[in-house]
Length: 284
Ligand SMILES: [Zn+2]
Ligand SMILES: [Zn+2]
Image 1: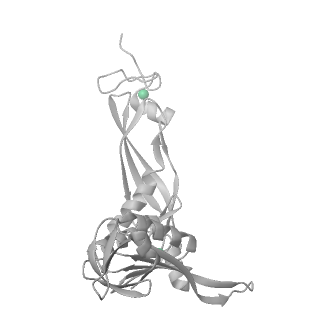
Image 2 (image 1 turned 45 degrees about the vertical axis):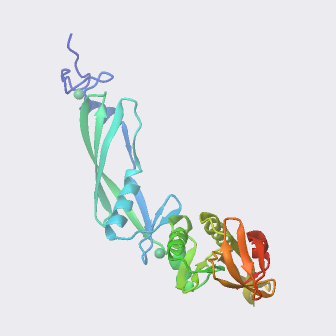
């Protein structure tokens, strides 16, 4: 016996299943199987066009990427909330700074019928300086991570730079400045600077020495003395023939292994030094 839609009377057909007594069209109107946020707020930085997603600022490298992230925010407010409905695709059409976006949702109902739903979503564009641009505008940062190498190694420098500039640290890294010994990273928060130094240290398999010190000490408004934290992260990537000072004496590096080095003094005497010992008594 053919079934009919209880609302509009349309008979069941191969492309028109009757779901819970309703045809797909009526099902969508009555049951509202998709949740679409009516209003979406998009917060972005007017200087660098970073966009705020779930509390994090994500940097973008192009206008296309910016708009893609903005559309993604609208898509994230759309979900099927009905076991008979499955989202097939969500298309968002929107222009920058326009107060409205048009959303087209393709929905699979009852496993057979494809229904398309169109809605308008109100968009409020909020401009707010991201922490990085905010600090840049005020020029403040709490800490500097100074990454140095015994022998400058471009491959390692590039790897570490990409970590420092990754989105994980984007909210706090104010500036990265390269120099011929390595690079300096200015970091808004000293807490994050310590974490960054640890992450950098662990991401390459080289012996390293980490030293913290305070500089530029000033009295702050509450009367406390505050200094900028300097974290020196020095990678001791030695090569045969390098010249160094160890415990106050000059040596040439004779050989390098995974566990340590063999040093030779000016009279040709050699000694084996572990990296732990070397890091203790090391000076360039
Ligand atoms: Zn119907
Ligand atoms: Zn910014």
